[in-house]
Image (cartoon, rainbow, N blue to C red; front, side, top):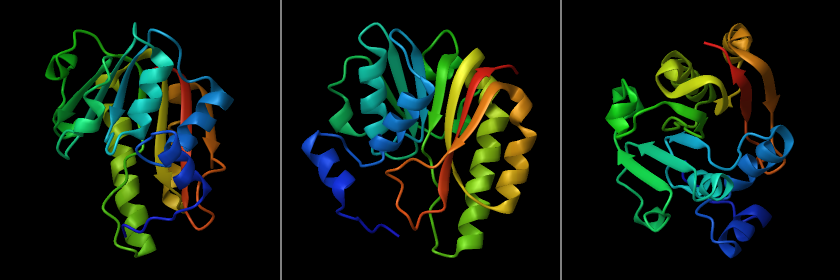
Length: 197
C-alpha cells in the first residue's frame, strides 16, 4: 500500500527538505515529551527513508550521533549529515554495540518501523505487534538505563495488552497519536522515558 497523500504535511516536508511527512510525528512527540537533547547518541531502527534521522541529527547536534539501521540499501541523501552513520542490515542481527562500530549503547532508541502491509487489518496488526515485541525484546542491546524510547504500533487489543505489560520497564510511559497521523490510520506511538531494564 504505497499510496502518497499529498496533504499539508506532505507539502510541508517537501518544502522543508525532509524525506517524509512522518518527521512531524516525531517533532510533536519531542515537543511534548522532551526525548532528545544535545550530545545524545541515538539509534534509529528501520530508519528508511530517513526523515526521523534528519530530525534527530538536528536535535542532538554536532556533538551527538545518530546511527540508522535498515534492511534497505543506505539512503545516499543522508550521507551528507556529518553526525549520522548508516547500516544496511537487520536490527535483529545486532547483538552488541560493536556490530555498529560503536563502543557503548545508546541514550535514545527510536523506531518508525512498519511491516510490509497487506491491507488486511488483522494481518497487518499481527505483523506490527511481532515487530514491536521483537524490539522490546532486544532493547537491552541498544538502550542504556535511564534512556528514552519511541516506537510506532498498529493498534489492536493484543497490542494494548502487550504494551501494558511493558509499562514497568520505564519510569514514564505514554501513548500518543500525533496530529499529523492520517485520520484513517490505526497507528499510534509508545513513548518510554527513564528505561529501567
